[in-house]
Image 1: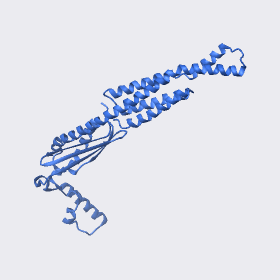
Image 2: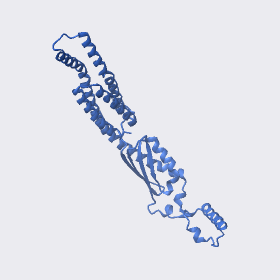
Image 3: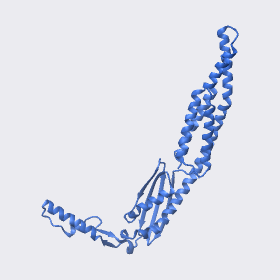
Image 4: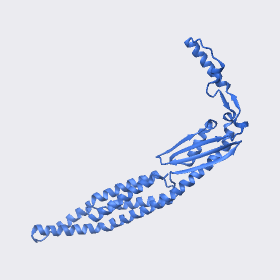
Length: 294
């Protein structure tokens, strides 16, 4: 299945009296890069969330936003608890600082209460495993929707790539069919030129054939055409198979570019040159499309 790297997915569910919402967006990227926006209650699950996303995608920059709404449920979201170990650590550090710098200021209750995370809502200390049991289902649904959109766009890309690949194959066959005629036309031009220079004197046929053979060898593009056809077959196989990896296709396009450049440099024929230009133009369009394939 050909998948694009662009897509969107969203899912939500009510769990333990709170509404969890997961929103995911993905765009092009050379590798897989995951960016998470998590509320404090979900920070302990960051590793699990990234692992789950990494199991489903191989390329693209994925931005996932998680929101938790208590919905006015004061029983779950409105109660606070004291994080006593953290407060004790604050007090110990302040005492050390006071002694080290010989400060006279007292460590007061108002000072201690003002420290971040001294008091937290009960939801932030909820068991991460309990949260993950429910949240994972919401995340999986968002991933499913994102995957579905990436696959739909991937099918559109596949149709465009297939059409352009067919055009390239057509230009290549014109080049292949033109190659024998190029040698014959060179031989004809060479004979005419020799006759002009020699004033109609007899031509050494053996020498003439030798020159034509040298020219034919230098301009032979058979190997390049064979390799190019092989690249087209591999490209088609990746699009129709289950492993349409963008990096592999991008590599094939680079190889096609090398082959068509060699064909263009070897042949001095105007008709072949026109088709080489057409192939290069289509390869540029292919390369642009492939940048969005996973």
